[in-house]
Image (cartoon, rainbow, N blue to C red; front, side, top):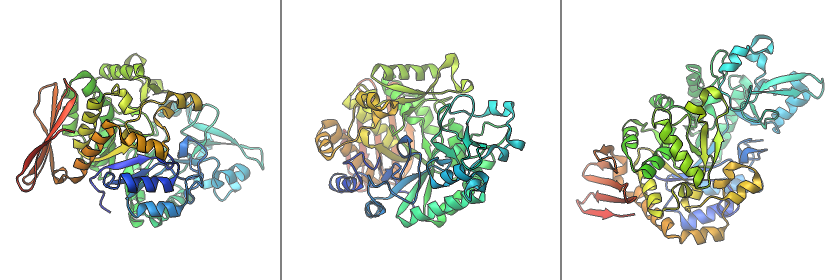
Length: 490
């Protein structure tokens, strides 16, 4: 399929109206001309944690959200993108439950990465463990007591806490895992899914003596295999990898769709500091085969994404402003991946509107920059409604990311649609969807530090964005196919 160069929505199945039926109704009634690029539906599957990202099964829809029929109904009007947590699956899945009961006797045992598959005898070399890119302290392993024998099996579990992991890693090179992944992709294609995001794909290769993150060249062999399976199912892949910008450039160079995880913090820096130089430099070289976002279900990316793009002291100042405005942080645990002085901000948990101090002009300018940047724009449902931080949800759940995960009732959606900033945003989104020049050539125009000028041109049609960083306001000048000119002030 061809990915549409128009705006996509990111939403949980229950975050706009309460379930998939309500989501479909709201989208068709209020946003049918807004999300022409499609809908990224965050995991709708039964899950044991991480709000859907610890999937128990990909062959079911969580009954509280609806059914596959609801998914197929939604796909009739919108191209759908869903997640495949290619690195792991829930410990509550039938596969791992059977392994936990029977151990190596289980028909599913080969799905999982026991340590003897990586190190002889299953005993890791301490020097190898020290090199692993850790998402939790000490090591990424989980000890499992086999019910029938009492034996302890140590398996790889990248995500979790010191004592518990709800997500158990798959051995993606095993025949069992490849069979399962192929069946999942085939099933998703049959349900009308057009795109699949490979979540946590950077962690799938485990190799002694490496960081076990984006291990080359093995990662490309796996990507080539899974892309083949996806295309057979009629599905396009999007890779989710948080890493240095050079990784995104290499992946895009291999022909894969990637995220621009640099843009959210860089746009904040530009607007807060009234300085466009770093953003201009980045937009000149960033991948063109990319998806852009400012906000999402996770936080605003900082390290490692922003390294060598923005001075870390400048990044630290942006983080401090966000904290003053009510944000909280996800932190890097591995000392070797922290910045100078122990700077450990991995993600800022904050709504984008709150990060900009609830400033309507600055928020609209941020979206204008995103929509003019190369790539397919995604807008998170909270950002769509210019949502503010929800500290009560953090207190209630104990989850820092809940600050930007408010669930809107249908009545709240209708109420917030009337906010002036939301109406301005919708007008801007319609322009981005409809103006043909965005399918042409992109250029960063020369501009002084306190301004930003971006342009798109296709034949005689062109549009130019001018952001005045002193006032925070933006203006778009355009010329259509008939030679008519105009100015749009979102």
